[in-house]
Image 1 (cartoon, helix red, strand yellow):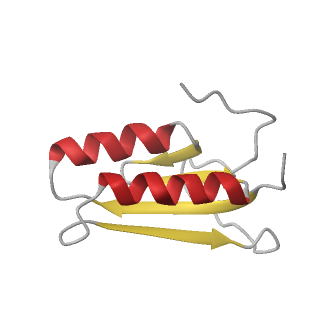
Image 2 (cartoon, rainbow, N blue to C red):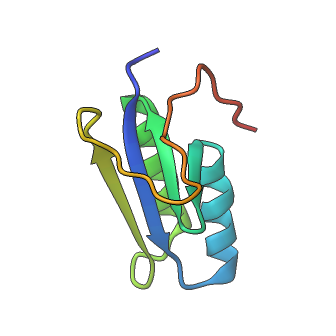
Length: 94
């Protein structure tokens, strides 16, 4: 398995059916997040798969998805009950 990089995936989906599909799909890859922002540790192959699947799920004329790669060397500031993101030893994707 390749090295995992940390990504933050945020979305704004305009239709409930598509929104639920995107949300349920991303939950399978996320280690944390809330509402429409997910924290994901992905290999290059997983990232490619996520991008291709999201392209199929969204309406490119009305929805938006942002995928940000976060440099592991960057300092992460957390407030409130937030937890530092961590890469788990395995994922269960159903």
